[in-house]
Image 1 (cartoon, helix red, strand yellow):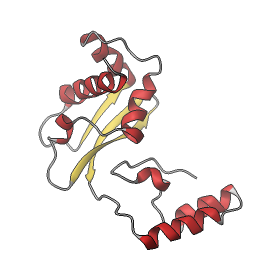
Image 2 (cartoon, one colour; image 1 turned 90 degrees about the vertical axis):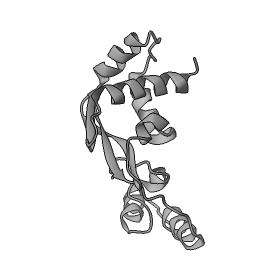
Image 3 (cartoon, one colour; image 1 turned 120 degrees about the horizontal axis):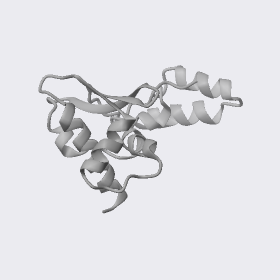
Image 4 (cartoon, helix red, strand yellow; image 1 turned 135 degrees about the vertical axis):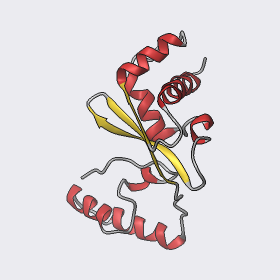
Length: 144
């Protein structure tokens, strides 16, 4: 089974085992990855954190999770402590690029000479708080 399919099977099992209709957040722990991986008879990845990271930044959550939300909402994963995570239901407001936005982001980033200036570019309101990583419904935790 491909890594992404393994990750999807485990994250889906975790979510569906804990989710009840009407919930707006669902907590889980790193140990749940091991528990449900074993239940599914899946060889676990060496880096368990990559499973969560994958769905926070690289891949969409399985359709079965997204089918539990209303129109204009989406599940994301946020950290909830050491080895703890939380599915959180948020408004799904896709960021639609425009020529003006592209120019502004390019200007702010490319004119930053220090990390501090880069942080200020992030907070000036010209780009998402998490930088370009927050495009596409992924909401990273705040940085700098």
